[in-house]
Length: 452
Image (cartoon, rainbow, N blue to C red; front, side, top):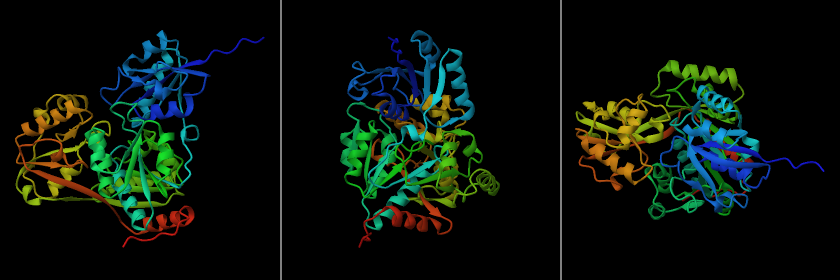
């Protein structure tokens, strides 16, 4: 009688998102593998926890430990790990191969799971909005499309890429329809930045950890699901229309970052964003890369129209700018919409906040030396919100330019007036409505009934 093969011992490298999804869809019920650990990166305070037994399934009655990525080599050797699966996003191709080399030098094989292995099929049409880099401008486009579909009478449910920074068991399936839902869930600033703008439009948002269960709940109340991507990851649900945003401020990144290049190559529609504020040469470089790699794809050009609610508080004043955290940190942007607004509305200057950083904000400035004085809204937990508040209050400025998608004034007490900076998608041309109309004809069987 042949000896039964031992299960392969594996580690999943992640950042509390794609890693859990890949485990749930590929490994959870497969006795051919034993996942001995997740490793954690990018997101603070994830390492040292456990993926709970209720989510890990019957093969893992004690759950699965989440350990520091820095301990990968020792983990591979001590646990006799044969496979390491990379499962997070917004990494340069060079960084991916460094991680592969670390795993292989310790003796393990290194692998990536692709769309066919990890995408779930929905019972309703799915339209996805993803990007080649964090901070490329996909959120304004997502909101624009949600508004267009809802305005034509379709029930749109947004499913957001995971952001489970709290109790994983409680966050397995999350549904947000009111601001009170955010309060009850103790949503972090990072989560509010993604959810609040959709709630303002009247859309329901789902997120969490177990995206098969999330899909069952979301599609039960939707005519169409909009997959709102995170970082530069590809969708968890198989899209019927896959729209991918490229950043004119970062030409060439569409071919140099993982898994953004995957999105670039598999897109149905490409949108070159920020063409109003990027140098013309950058736009030309991005379009040249599109011609070389995806000459078959429709290409749209778009602006991010930046506006403020109190321009009189900017003119001639010294301001401190606070931006979406991931865009500035692992997204690699030096400045964002807040600095654009400061220049456009005649600020006397943007105060460099780096000397005034407190706690987690000071640490972010040290960890990301490319930052140019804007404050990243690090808000993964209560302590970071406190540090953000203290930093903004310490900066000697006349006003705070809040360029995050969430109203920080509702979450903290600032000693300066707040100017809300907003930005919306604005296409140069009229191709997007025709693309959406074609999607509607082909996939949305119910006749639209426009809003009154």
